[in-house]
Amino acid sequence: MTRLLRKLSALKERVSDNPPMISQKKTGAAQPNEPALANPVSLDYQIGMTWNDTFLALFDRCVTEYQRGTQDWTTYYSPADLELLAAIGCQPREFFDFVEDFCDEGEPTTSTALLIAAVRRDYFLTVQQGIPSSRVVTRDDLPTFGDGLGGVTYLPRILAKARAKLRGELDPDLMFGCGGDRNFLTKHGAISPADFLRRVWAAGDNDQKLADWVAKQGL
Image 1 (cartoon, rainbow, N blue to C red):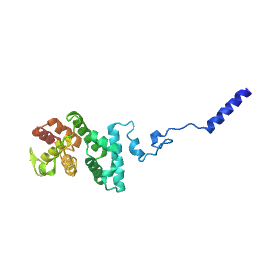
Image 2: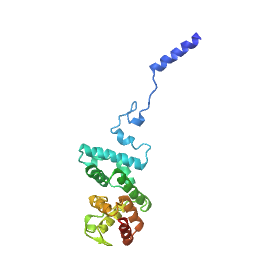
Image 3: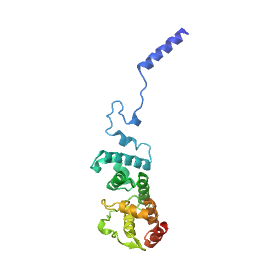
Image 4: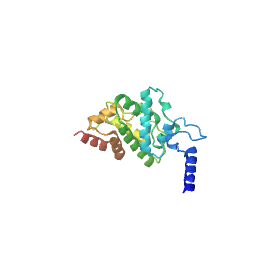
């Protein structure tokens, strides 16, 4: 018994002198003999996360940067962030526009931005097979604010923007879901921008089909 107690005591001393190493991988802290990560947060949020969770985490980070007063939005993104946006067919400037409007006006909400991105991603991966369009739709290519379709003013403009959004062709200075778009959708039955996008996708080139659907939403 005495011999057994001596062995246990010796083992306890060895464990105390050499405590087990605790992995720091998940916290982004440096491992022994490894350099510290410059921005552990931007790496950690992508580990084991789906694209939509990563999108939301990036959105939150960009909101924080904007609220800190960071003016240059191009500094918001790491290479991994840009890779994510490219993979879902989202332009960096467009992403920032959603962040900016959310911070300044409270809308589109984070969930709305995600739903819009999901529609674009679906179209990008299924219809375009992940190949970006080289066309750019500028302000000069859009109908005017006063143009109408089926008696509905502004519909031709938001319809053209929605189609360009689906194809990833909107000029960086244009935004689907801007204040004018939101005002139109709210007035016509509080239509979700993402739902409108999917309806535009389903309608194809049939403008009247889309106009009829919009007219019914406000009833």
